[in-house]
Image 1 (cartoon, rainbow, N blue to C red):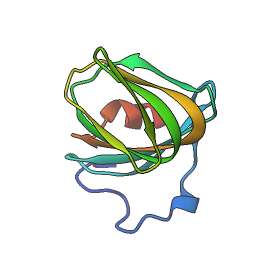
Image 2: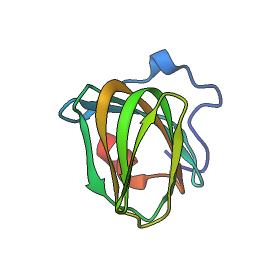
Image 3: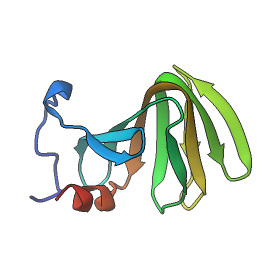
Length: 118
């Protein structure tokens, strides 16, 4: 499949499978093309998005729940409706304080996520 365009123009959330990516953490790739990717990550309370970094720009929206977000040395408790921006190469991670979902947008798309699903 070429990444030039997303396989579908209209995306039905209920038709997308969740992928277990860690203890208490699962992800679904909503849509992507070469320039942009949208994902959802569901966390159980206590689930951890380990500290990591990547060259992609990232914007994340807290759809539900509450998360302690760390970007570099800064930590902030974010709740439903809040958002954060992760610059390229910045070390960041999340700890779920109240079960919920993060909606992540990446530019360019996360080719490593696509390779993991194959």
